[in-house]
Each structure stands twice: as structure tokens, then as C-alpha cells.
Length: 339
Image (cartoon, rainbow, N blue to C red; front, side, top):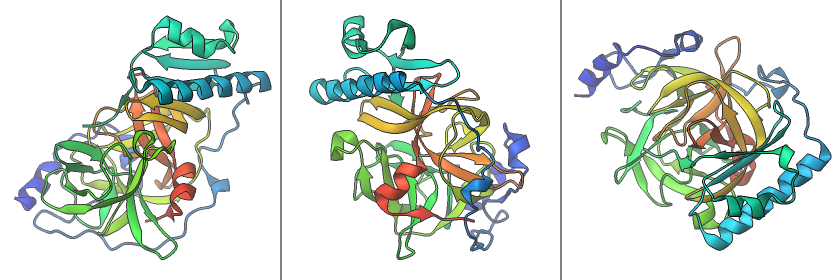
């Protein structure tokens, strides 16, 4: 059965062909085999060489103060009243104003935004959802694959290691509880056990992340379509840059898609699992969907190497949100694994 499944992967059309041909290799062996290419031990590239390094206009001091006040009020409101309504807020450098996306009624929005001038806040009425919902990976596991437990499906993110050199895979904290043993989406292979969960409604942290450990994890991420067997090496990790227009994600639901523009790296998003901040806000391209939670958010360099910027969290259908690598790494005391 495993060999037949690999045969089916080769006929899938690749939606992001331009990006997948650069620096990609088969994620698994030829049909009939269960091994992957040998891992290469490499050193992460310096951030000064980042292909997405741009300088975006900074928010005026008064606007930054208004945004901080609004986000503080939102966090307090959610902590007091629960997650009945959803919120996301950030400064859009391109538009030069604060964006607030929410399904809360007008009276609630008014109480949260009274500190700001009406002309400086754009309110978008929409509901945000954690992105719950490729498929048959084998060790060493890659980022962007489908992982599951108890009917819930998410995506793996990227491999990290602690100071002792022990490797883990990052995913979203709203996916699985600590101590859960997850499998590949097919159910054929044990993926690992969840630990170090961070989630507002569970641990009180303003992050949405966790680790999966106990198996072998490689510094590579899946590329191409939802059943693709191709992959790209991870070469570095660091901050995203506001204004860069070609970020990518690679998840079990939508596959690999690029063309995302980072509109903020200090956004706040409040979903059914609480308020998370700071997070990356992005628009454009094919938007993430249910099941893409935890998948890598990254940029390619000219050699086809992937620079990790975070992992996917949530969307309102127009704007996506990602947990920054620069939050995950210091919070968990880990560093990137390169391939």
C-alpha cells in the first residue's frame, strides 16, 4: 500500500511550479522504497543575506500608541468575556492606518477603539478561525506534512533543536494537547509526542505553538501540491519583513503557495483559542485554509533555499496570520535545523 501511494503522488499537478523546481528533491524514495536522501549537516545562513530584507515605513508614534491601547483593550476584553467574538489588529504600513478585523458588534468595537481617531482605523467585519482540518510522510519527517490525532488534522511546520541537539517539529499550539501521540495523516506512521504547548486559553501564554518529538525530523519542507513528494532545504530562519511580497506557505490542505505580502509583524489575532501577539499578518496569493495550521511560512532565496519566518495560525479568508519564528525560538530555547 505504501508503494502504491507513492506512485499516485507523481501525477499531481503542481500549482506553484516556478518555486518548486528550484532546489527541490524527492521527499521520499522511488516507489517501493521507504527511505529518503541522506541528510546534509549545514550551517544556517546569516540574516544579512535574507532575500526578503526590506525596510517598511514605521508607524507614527501616535498611531503606535493607539494600536497598543487597542490591542491591550482587546486582550482584556477577551480575557474577561471569553472568545465569543474574534479580533485581529495591526498597522498596515501601505495604507498608513490601523486595521481591525472582527465579528464583534458595533458597540463593542466602539469601546475598544475610542482611543484612536476614526480616520486612523479601518474596521473589517469578518470572523476569524483557527486553521484546523502531504499526507503519508516517513522519517526523517519534513515540514508541511499532514499530522493527525482524534479526527483533528494540522500540518507540520519546521524542524528545530534544543541545546542538547535533540530535534523536534514545530506546529500550532491549538492543534493538539500536551502528551498527545500524533501520526501522519494516513495513520500509517507515528509522528511523535506533543510537548511544550503554548496557547492562551490553555497555558495563558500569548503564543500558539508546540513541539512534537520522539522521532527523526529533517531540515526540509514539502513543496508543490497537496500530495507532492518534492521538498526544499531549510537554510535559515529569522524575522519577516513588512512590505515583502513573495512569502510562501506549504500545508496539507492548500499545498505550497507563494505571493503573500507581509503587512505587519506586530499584529494581534484573537480566535476561539484566545489572543496571540505579536504575530505576522499577510495578504495576497492563495490564502490558507483549514488543516494548514502549523505549516511553514517562509521565503525562497535565489538558490531555492527556504528561509523560515514562522508557522501558520489563522485566517479570516482575506488576511492570514503566522506565529513568528523569532517568538518561537526564544520561547522554547530552540534553533533552526537546516537541510
